[in-house]
Length: 331
Length: 243
Image (cartoon, rainbow over all chains, first blue to last red):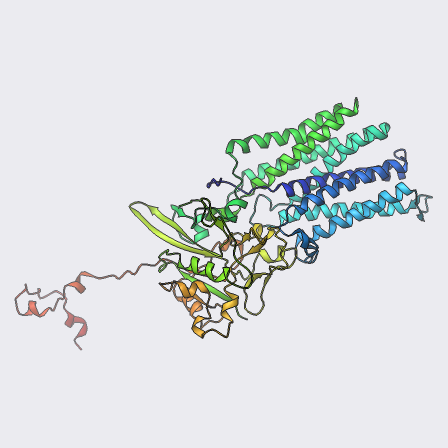
């Protein structure tokens, strides 16, 4: 049912799952490789190949889940390969390249650890041995960040969707993906290498707090936005009181289906505090308590993931598309 | 360089929707396949259109006026929908500036509709590709047609000639002259998209008439005393015309 009026974009669940799943996957990989890097310099005990290897398998499962979800967004999924061609201009195209590239590197990283094939690449003058898994890990880490930037820029580059057109979009995608990934890493470590759980819990707390700050900042920013386009600029008539009497059809169109979410204002008012609690506040509390029992860490990740689904829904629904000015009245 | 465009005269548009139906008719009959309609004769019909006529009320009753507003792709000179397309299906033709979608390349990701502030694109729910006004590219170059017919379907259909078609980069074209001389403007100029299509505003013709233009001072009736004669000091036409 189409409800005209002050409504905003209809979030697509395919994109919600894509962005949250790959975000968690990227975050988990960054967590694992951060640990390996610390361990390389002797700051933490080096864990078994299985720890990093199976952790990366988990990363791949999350990324594959996101990739599968993304296909549900396409009207013509069989032509998806074409979407890698316009990387010169399109952030979406860049993401389409960065995601499989990152997956490939994560697969290689997992493979090197699980097979135990870790050929030496170079020995630093300090006597530090750099093996191939470290080199692949560094490349994958860079690609994880590239992927965060691509995903965030898909939204941030649309200049008239002003709720998205801010560096905070890219920063928050990175922080929220990182937060969920490190929380998952904390649970994974609690199950497989309990001595290391504290390291991941600490970082998960810090990144979740930063993500909370970043997301809150974007909410404050968006609440103060004044629309640049008005009904006056939309039809080019200078008059303070202009009312649409007919959008030209009565049965709805793509424009009324894609850009109006059809949810009540009460629903929108509920989902904002819900995601702030579930994605940030509750996980921070559970992480702090989580060292007592791994179950709390599992719950922390699940609730944070659900919170991020709600956050992503709200992110899309908050975007106020100027085209909606043209679709206000059936009649 | 050519930039084909429509110029729509809001002063003349009567909101009859003839452009909508003739656009639909032409573009649903072409070799690119139909413009899909769902439940066309059912209770809740919906479908793909390239062109819509909307109606706005300016002001409040009783001081209001009705504005009929045809809306289609504006073929922006700097189209925001084109660079975001991940497949290259959306493109702007160099030779005539028409923004087109290659239906064989489109993956139906809808990203271009997010990037178009005007809501000019509609997905075809059956073919699952993005569709939009083509400026009847399959008509305007069709040499089997009479020259008079080589115009977009909507332009041909308009009973009040509210739709003009031509090259806005040619200063002598009918569209350039209309934009220049009749106050043509672009929609949502704040986004810097430089729409090629322009709109001509509603304009009312006012003339100022002074009292002495209505009542001639040297009216012969006054001279013949059939009307009161003007006083000696009052101005007469002879003051300005007696050379």
